[in-house]
Image 1 (spheres, rainbow, N blue to C red):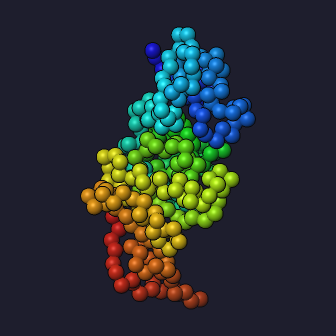
Image 2: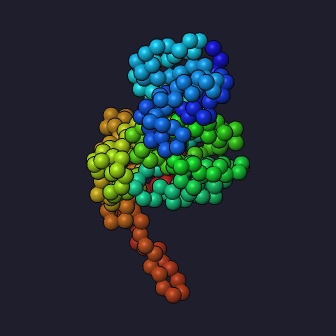
Image 3: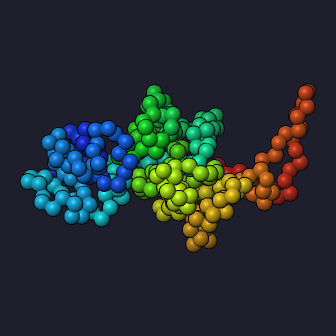
Length: 293
């Protein structure tokens, strides 16, 4: 059986497609009623020759159609998307930024710094997808796309000789395992405050979803770095979310930053400003060095 494309939206299915019958997602698309499983017959009608579904959710196997039953279609979609596109993100330095506020700004700032040093850098986020050379792709309704789109973008980034890819990582995306198959090199936490409780219901559920980004660091072959705002009231919990065994084995490094906490690895100090000049402040009592990651 030849698979020519993969899709979770039945309207994006074409002859030779593999269709993911998702049940657990946001489904903000107006044409999707209930969930993706509800539309598996529409996908077959559009030419899908293989379906991926939760075990037992399609009790009668459709005639002449491949059926792959899995425990978790979301995780299966992430892993199969990575394989279908030949794991394009593994060759990039992947930077994921999460937090209630500042994801878009920080993503653009990181991209600007990388471009300034001459790196080929791209971004994925709220205001669109930016490539090193190609035209910007306009933003979808999701700051953090689903896995099929993420790895398609990754394939296009690789074709554009991208070295670094910085992306906004949302709590919804982590709750739905959209980023499950991405081996992040760097994870950055900006801050946490009350938001999205219509979906997460509790602050703890919201926080745990964001902390999953740090829990998955170091699973692959690459060394990973977590960079955490320790001034935030929840910063220490994000530090603790990083696997302690991986920290001890030097597979994952934890770096902290702040303004108020003098024990942070990186402390921002304001310039002394006058109407005619600016003066650097005295250095912090502890020193640091910057590495090219």
